[in-house]
Length: 529
Image (cartoon, rainbow, N blue to C red; front, side, top):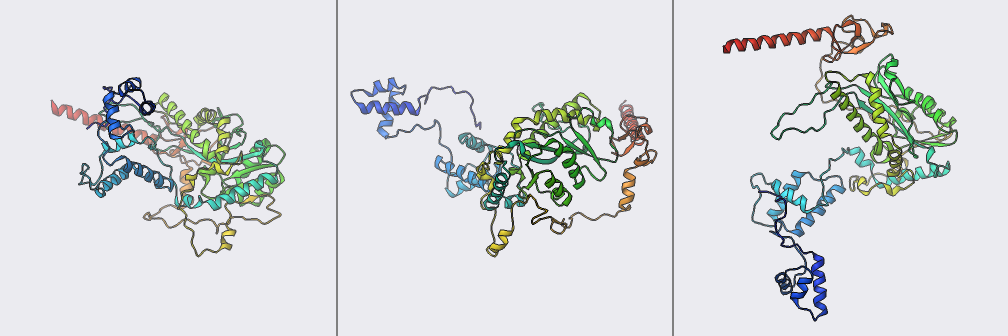
């Protein structure tokens, strides 16, 4: 059964509610016949007489009425909106189940699937078409911690603290001195996007450089005027090559960390000292962070911030989706533009892997599109930081009834828990530094324990050795470049392999499999003959 019949092929019901209202007013004036009023307002005479006889002056829709009734559907729409406001928006399947349950309670003649106890997809499509106020959206993941953190009391305390910090340092009308800093990760890989294919296609494939690309951390910083600092990038490794810095955005910095590509206390100290402070004015400024312990648990960082007139304000935990300007407006378009750039590069360079040498060109293309003045200004405006506006946070962000305060909690303990921590002159006043004991410790893993044959030191040594000559990365001459095999993902000298971006062992195995497949094909052809 079709749910939409395409182009309208009849003139029935072409008149509007306004025509009917005007016709009623003309009849109330008197001295005018029904026929004349109908002709003047483009309403069929028979229709107008029937409406007057039945005392029905509301224009309905043509055809059969909706199965559940208009009033019930209105109540269903309000119920769906209420579920969304508390963070439990129903899915398509859940709405169809609700419709079936309503039909059972209303004792209607059943037209739905009684075996699966669910309404049909045709009814769902018609329901969505009749109610344009509802729309399909992909939800953002919200953890229990984020839901519990988004409560009115803690958020009001945060905005009170922000207002006090802005007023005390005369920063209310100085957006150029209000900064937000945060980091995100980018993958050196081209993720396939939606493609156009034949209607009967089931398995559609798209080329991908690697199964899992390298992760690179990008530290971004922006002020309320929309001015962005150059990106500060972190690679995993031991030695940096100048080739990686080519085609990077002007003023960009690349740092190397041996353990991982994530920021730590030393790298944040370097960013603050050599990247942020030289670009800020000498006057008072506010730096808003997300409360990561690498930023606030070091006395050296706090001392450097105090000496350079930097006031650090930490956002409430698990609320950065709504209160961090970069998270709200910048990182999502940056990742989208970077994925698009990687896809374009992958299509133009098939059978090649995106490496660190190409990162600068791809990042520059994405950064220039995402780091605009409009993006920076909108991020601070939507989070209520500048202009200062606590009501900028939408009501549905608080997830009503998501937090249930325990009656046993005392008022004194509630006063001690603050949503954020201002780090202004903390060395001379009371300091609140997170220790390892106060941080959340990881729980036991549910994965089965496996036997480990190498200790950590031996494993790190194997990862830093060339897979061909077994020479350590630390002992390699600076002129020799390292590459990563696209098959086994192991590292080796570029001069130790005879092939491009693949080690000798993987290439021999690949040639061996190709030869076996060729022999099998010849055997099948000979057998058919």
